[in-house]
Image (cartoon, rainbow, N blue to C red; front, top):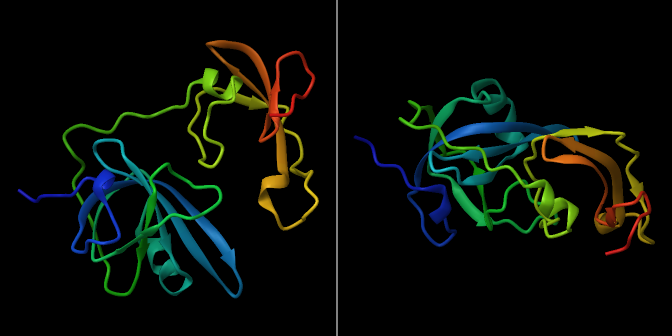
Length: 189
């Protein structure tokens, strides 16, 4: 039986990791002149990690990897995840390079459970806004992305308005990064 490390214990100071993960999302990142690839990976315990594949290898892995399929990864780098907005709540991310080995893997006996963010944490403003979230519900009335900051290259000034509808919530109106609209009026955080 093959042993795999849990994604939750990955750290930069150690090498020789061997993980089995499911590809949740594949995102093409446009970097001129070629594209890079970002992945959201999850292990059998439900721990997620962001994976960066630079443009030199992106085309190969975009054809080889498939969402909702399991793969084993060895000989990859683990780096600090210093992105302003992270794809996962893991403090580190993976980086695939020339000697990384990625192979199809059998799925585990139990699939990881989804970890959805409760509506209440969005409404009351306790959700970590530096991490993208998984959410069950319907986003409607999505507005335009607006930069309300003074520096056009500062991402913290971007705002997006939308409505959230779900079985546990009649209706909520939220300005991402600004505040909650309980009565239709924006409130600053």
